[in-house]
Length: 505
Ligand code: HEM
Image (spheres, rainbow, N blue to C red):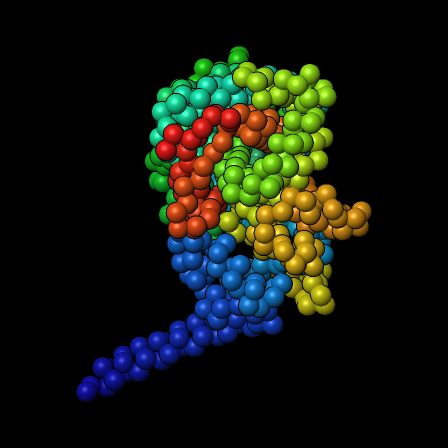
């Protein structure tokens, strides 16, 4: 070997060893930062662990539920990510003055339009901008603000009713998850655009919007664990110009809909003039992205879960029917259950058992598929005296906290709406405070009142008029794909029959 060759290999080996040492030091430092919090060893070393699980159909949700049962209320599921299932952490993380901002996982949800990034409400990272935008539209989403939407919801419910009557006559099994999705999307479109998009009437995703929204949620799910790589791949200057998914949705909304700046969407006869940013189209876009995609899968998933639990728990179904019958008999002259007579929201909004059914179904089947992530601000955070340093991403996974037996009782894993009615004042306060179905604080679901109004109305209609026989031969329960940001239900096959008619199978 010549002196030069020896010198070259010595330098190469030294460089390689130094690189390996640097890598090892980096891994150890990353590992040690949160090493006092239990979780899979690999998850503490690399976010590839999280990436892998989020991209499986079982998603992070199922994996984290198992890890919480094994390790308790704190679980490390990423290099910088902690899932917390202690109720006392909720006001700390999501409380209105907490200073916890959204984690980087929200960045991959930011849409791209005309070569620029346009965040929806939920993906707006800047707290001041988020607050200003939210305040400018908040009054539209209060109970009084959403009241005018009742007639639009009622129209879609009547349409669903006529389809269910037709399907009952055909006596074929139908996929309930599909029909709740068509209902939610037509309802959302009526609220937003003043017109149905024909999902229910055609029985499918007529204009591809459902597929586009799903693609967006799958993209969020796929890349939530690795925003820096997502940015490199999808947000470099070339990709931004060529990006099909988000740009298509934008053009789709503005070119294929009858929506124009002169004809603003119905739900948005909002405070556009008071909104803080000038370009009107961008404001429409942000709001539409927020409301249409916020309303579809979440509402459909929740409705499917409600029907599943009710029609597999007959005492609960009977109790709900008794409440609806009794109430509407006294206020509507006994018309409830008659064809074409669907209770109004004013009749339903305060019915305790109906409210309890919805809360209980959302407790057992929340649509979020990973913890609702926020960054710990300066000054660190303490959970049961355990320190979580500033800059860590922390979040509560609704599915995990909703199974807390200290809060919801020893039978927390079971569907029992009565728990919400039997609890004393203090117990009820704790149960409400731990319920994360609509999230909490400054970024809690803006559409909660609309969602509750339409769920109460549609549940009352279906329960009053139809029997659903769930075909679940393997007793597999509710199945969903948890790899998207919002759980996407697997088909749930049911036979529909008019209440009071005899089964023909
Ligand atoms: C049962 C149905 C629904 C459920 C379970 C649900 C759940 C949620 C959750 C958990 C969040 C917080 C997301 C996060 O911080 O990562 C959220 C936010 C949001 N939801 Fe809903 N949602 C539902 C229906 C709706 C409807 C019908 C609309 C629109 C009319 C809507 C609009 C929004 C918006 C705009 C946000 C973002 C709020 C913000 O960042 O300030 N949601 N929703």
